[in-house]
Each structure stands twice: as structure tokens, then as C-alpha cells.
Length: 447
Image (cartoon, rainbow, N blue to C red; front, side, top):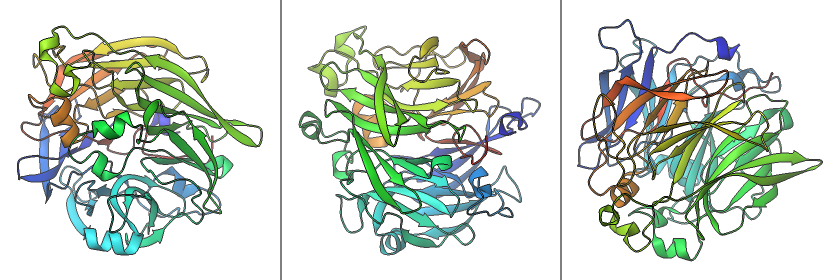
């Protein structure tokens, strides 16, 4: 069982930069018995101002699905998209997991010409190949964005995945319920809406995404669109139940335009159709000192939670929610996906708040990209969202860091590990992948 997998010994962390120096893939030692525990043990430089983003493995449990089996494929390569530069890097970690090697680069021109898209964002390994979501159409900074497919073995781009996209134009995340032959996509914004920070005019006009789309996987067809309402801007991270017999999942809405709250929603199968229901509201907070608010929030006078990531434990019991604005990591028991229970809170960083870390003191940024070990006992997270947004909401700087929390997998609760703090210096720190897999790396065809 995946939940019984060995304890992770390494983490791979995307470390983009904003100073003209190359982005990098950093390797962090997680082996408590190692002399280099909690340290960055290698750094592989990639492109300049590329903004490497949501990377993943070339293979996962989906490779064992009965209708498209690839039982001999190895989990040895990391597929690393660059959201700003539109390149895709293939890293081999087999020979020396602590020192990845760059073995192939698909440049932006190849990505655009072969896929029909630009600005690749998220990678998931699937039954037929490697799926990559992208924000915009090739040759454009606008839509439609969508999904393209890459070959499992040689990493060639096979082409656009969608056959009938229906009303979908905005793009962000992509995931699925393999047991139901259904995929789900979410919506952020076109590149011009985020390139220099959130475009507030677009936000006020409610132009960001507020829908998720349900797809027939086999026919690659949009079969239903679920609209949260345009008050709820930016529907981002999709977290379907890991158990393939369960037909529900969770998505976050970053900003309610009426009160600056964030929210979590449950989508679910409802007979022959699908429905969606809000289950959690997370309110905005008052600043400790209004004078310390960044310019983007001065006139508003409040700190939105800015929920920009969340992670679901492999047993589908706990949901961990990153509040990047208020500096909180929240834990919910979602055993009943329609009646969550708040069971834990951890504070670090935050706009004007700067809840300190015991080993590092005050920190910039707040909980953002989050990853969970397969056994659910160790929660890792970093502090950078997207450089342009970092600079907008944390203008004093958002130098990268990574921390760990220990969790109670029985009754809930989480506590910051006071000794674990990884300093990335002038690099930012974004996506984390754990060696051997984690709670968002795989999709399952069998319970």
C-alpha cells in the first residue's frame, strides 16, 4: 500500500529566482540520521527567469490502470515546466538521487508548436502518458489554455488533449477520477493578468476563473461546467479523493470579492451529473499595524487569507490548507467531505504578522506550496507563490524557506518542527516533491 511506503529521505524543491541568476532544482536531505539533514545537498541550475513551477514524476500508480497499463515504466525522471519561460526540463535522478541530471530540454518553441499551448503549469502522470496543463494558446497570451499530452518514454509532446472543450477557456490545474473515467480542470487567469502581479482591474471586473470543468476522459470532451459564481475569483488547486471508488474532491477559491475571504468547495457526483458545494469559509483578518500593509492592500485595510494551496492525505481523512496571506496552515478532518471539522492550526510568517520560526526568527512570506508524506505524518511547505505576486504582497522580500510540521494522524493536530528550517537564500522556494512519491504525486486505479 502507498500509505505504508518507506519514509522519504530527499525532497526536490523548485527554486526560481528574480535577480537574473538561473532557476534551480534543489535537493534537500530529509534523512534524520544523515550528517546533512535539513540541508540543501545539491543545486541543478536551469533557465534564467523561467519560473519553474509545478513539476512531477514521469510515472506513478496510474501507470498500472487496466485499460492503459505501463507496468515496466520507472519512476526516475522529473518533468519540470517553466511557467514564465515555457520550457520543459527532464531530470534523471536514478544514478544519484541527490544529484539530478538534466537529460532533455523542450524549449518554448517546441512546446508551442507541438502542443498548441504556451505557459505550461502543472504535470500529472496518467495512464496514457504525461499530462501537462497550460495557461494560454500558442502564439498568444490569452485563451484558450488547456492540457497537452507527453510520451511516457521519450518525452515527446504528442499534442493537445481536448477534442471538445465546450465553454472552457481559462486553465490552471488538471486531475481526475480514474475509476469514473472523469477528469476535472480548474481556472486561474491568462498570463497578462498575473505577469506583473495580480491585475486589480481584472480582479474587480471578475475576469479571473470561478469554474471547474468535468470531462469525459475517453472522449476528451467537456461534459459539465460547475460555476462557483463570479464573486469567487481564482479556483485553483484540485484535490480529488485518492480512493478511486469515491467520486468527490476539493478545490479552493482564493478570493471572495465581497469580504476578501477564501473558501474550500467539495465537488461530487450527483446521479448522472456533478455538483459543487462550499464547505469552508476562511475570513480576512485585521493587520497588526495598518501602516505595514503592502500598497496593494493599503486602501482595503484587511489581510485576505489568500488560500493558494491545499493537500489531501492519502487516506482522504485530513485536508491541509495554506493561508499565504495570514500566515497560517489549517488542518481539517474531511472524513465527511460535506461537514469538515477544523482540528489544527499552525502559524508562520504572514502579511504584517510575521509569526516567527523557532530556528530562524521572523520570516517573510507565508505557507504556500504544501506537500505531505505518504503516511500523513510529516507536512512540508514553502513560502513562494509566483515571483510577481510575491513582490506584490510581500514587497520587503520573500527569500525562500522550507519548514516541516509533525501531524497527529489519529485525532488531528499539527505542530511546527522547531529545528527544521531550510534557508534558500535569495532564491524563492516553491513546489516540493518527495523521493518515492507523496500525497499529490500519484493517481490510483485500485482502492
